[in-house]
Amino acid sequence: MDKLAVLTAFLHSIVVYNIPLLYGTVGEITVEKSGSLNLGVEGIMAAGAIFGYIFGCYANSLLVGILAGFAAGALCGLLFALLTVTLQANQNITGLTLTTFGLGLYFFVGNSLKASGWPVMNDFANIKEGFADLSIPLLSDIPLLGKGLFSHNILVYLGIVIAIGMWWYLNKTSLGLRLRAVGENPAAADSVGINVNRSKYLHICLGCGIMGIGGYYMGLNMGGSFNSSCWINGYGWIAVALVIFANWNTALAIVGTFVFGFFNTLRVSGSSLAAAFPGALGWLASIPTQLYQALPFIITAIVLIITSIRNKRGSSGLPAALGLNYYREDR
Image: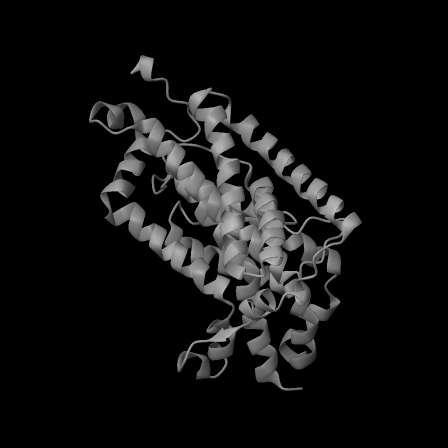
């Protein structure tokens, strides 16, 4: 067995599994930086997945699918903003309701189309070819790391660009700094002329749109095979926890999601590693599959404990006004 090939495939799979989490995490950070806590990531990604996939296939265009996934997520964000910013509804309950709504929409639309003729991804050449791996010249030739890190589909590279771009936007631009001011103290931001509601609406929709692209990625990564389980499969909830792990920093989210991608990949590739390296990693073959399936959620719980301890020491990037509705009349 080619040990180098096994390690390369393992590293490649880590990136494949971590990118949907990256989209969800970066999107949720963008929303939370506005002071809004949206627990509807799972449902928003599901809505982006189903509509992105359907419109992308019918148009036979990966770009249309990306835009449709973004639009579906952004519309969910618009609904969340209407309820929580304008109507002052409870953010926790609204987010949970949005999860139920998004998942229900996913299964309703999916089952309806499945009965009349489900679009198969491989039947649409532009989608299949557009989602194929693209090797970065020179970098992809590096032994082990090249094929593992620098030979992926366009949505992987887009996710990295969005994460870095949002870090730059939030920390280096006037609009991003104004957004952070809204998330820290909306009354103070309002007093210096920042339109708090407009900033919240814009960035809630933007963040939810990014989540929608992540959902579309998951649909394509699973080959567009619609069955009784949702494509998102709990990734939205893990993304919410990763926001804390990344300390509300979209650049650190790349590292955090890579760690979770590693543990998730063990579930699929653990036996291959055990066979390739029986002396050092042979014990992986004896681990029950159920433990592998539970591992990402166990790690999530551990991360929450560690970050909670860290936050008590004053090193948290948590927006001060997160989860609190802003009443302008009480300013």
